[in-house]
Image (cartoon, rainbow, N blue to C red; front, side, top):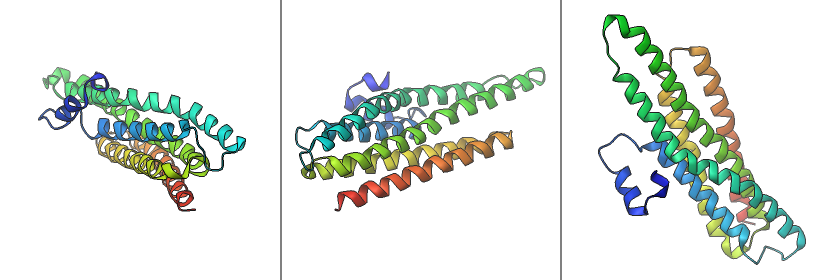
Length: 204
């Protein structure tokens, strides 16, 4: 699995001539790192005001972020696997008697390849909601770490959306594509709002 390999090997995998891992996996990884930075700040012994309210809020954010980060981490390899299935479907025989099966396999694979980045957008938005809590209650000296985490989560959400749009362009069921596009837009807007709010809190 990509996430179990050393960093240098991961970078080499992304820069190889192989189509996967690609932008979808990179987006998931960016968001997973962003969530990790938020967790680090939440775990610091010092908080913004040193109050019990700070500690309680950060503990709640930590609980949510642990699960979010795990799902984002899983999405790194899941995205690559989903893309491999798309490639495999396009390589199916094009003989006249097998065209219908090939088309169905391609559409099924494209839907699966869209589901993974959609999850990344949703999870990134959820992590950014927790970022607002950490920005408000975390130690001021770690504000840059929160800011980098927010930037990575914002980038992960945007990157995942790009992958969704590419896949939707090849999905023949326009009603399904429109529904996914609308859901993606909703989560993307939520992510942007939360990121902007967290950034604003860091400036206070």
